[in-house]
Image (tube, rainbow, N blue to C red; front, top):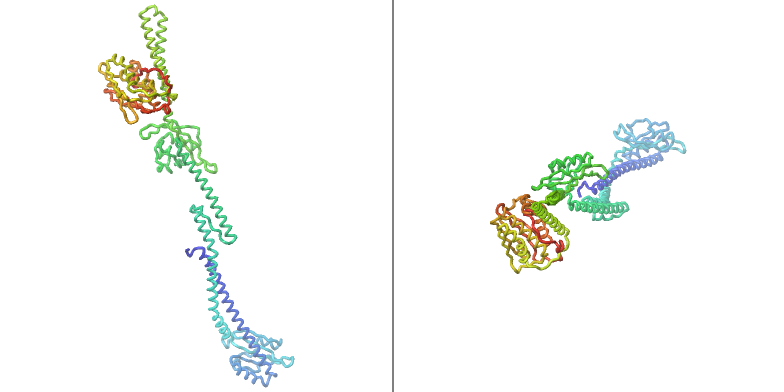
Length: 608
């Protein structure tokens, strides 16, 4: 412990008190010893004076002899003999040169008949002198007085010498008192030091450690209060920590981004979702301005308006570019308040609506495409029907041509509706029935269905598959998907020199079916969208070859309900390779999709 610690401050106080008491005691003892020595000398002088006064019965005659004998017996004393009027009758040798005037003590002895004494400074002796006067009486009458004097310096020196001899015992007592004071200081400060160290541990966050209860009511109550305070603080901190962890876990698990800023537009906190949405590293966000962390002007304006109290607007116009992809966010702001209810900032919730907007766009596009696909044949049917009713029935050749057009448009309308119904059944995720079938048989049936079309377009169709390869699938759906792919390949192959090949590749527990053609191919920017409904690369050619724009969507859904996938690769001008991957042992218990009555295979357009 340092000297500035509590122990040394208390011990220093004790030492100061002991020192003052020791010094005061020595000073008082010196005064007492000196006064006692003077009083004792005064008493002795009075006895000597009374003795000499008893030896001088008359004021004359024997006075000189009495004083002479007294001077011989007491050579260090001075004697003077006064008559009734106060005149010096006789004096010892030392007192002969002194003033003959009677002093107050002599006057008191002569006039009042009592002993008197005084201390005065003698000019003759050059020091203080103690004088004692006693009356000389004959019977009851005062006939004179005897005065005895002695310098008090020697008396005082003797008293001081005796006082100095007390230094050793007094010093020993002071030393003992210092030892006792140190012991008492240690005993007093040790519990306080224990409480101090316990409080320091509490201050460092170690609230689980208990402070021992020292003896004594006050310190014991203080220790109990500290322990109770630590226990309550520990409970509060644990509660706050749990709440913070829960809040942090909620924020980190949220798909929405949360961005909190203060009144100066500096970032207070940001969760992982907001970092990913805004492309902001966490270590670079805290304490920085929003303008530094995000360059999006719409978000900056929204936060600025919210800080001014305008929470009525939403920001859905911001387009945030991150890692090369465009992300659309919906931002909402709410006030951030402290414990006193004062506004200290704004909390912004960021929701990624990119997928929703894409789905909304797809929905609009799908509705528009369906409307267009249905309106075209219906318009044709209605127009030719009205033409027939207006008189074309009278011309058999024209009537037959119009009826054939109406039939083709009706077939096209039925194809669109049938494909929509197939997709609807696939989208309902109903359980499908599966059976163990030969893949070679399914491929052969699909190829046979398309051979007339291939012969018509002078396209060579080649399908091969191991005879022993079997799958557990819904044969109707798989045959429909394969037929769509083969028919698509035939339609878009080079007329008079085209070639379509169907090949099977086994990879462990899966099988991949390739349908390759050497047709016009597909541009790279269209590859990701060819499986979308009604998506057409060349709308004019698609309608010319008779596609509905839904065939590839059906292929994709059929593969997915069997736990498989589809992919496409193409080189413009050289051809396209569509592939369907299916598991070999897929069981009915883990496959969902449409019922077996999915309908017959039908054609579709390439790139739809």
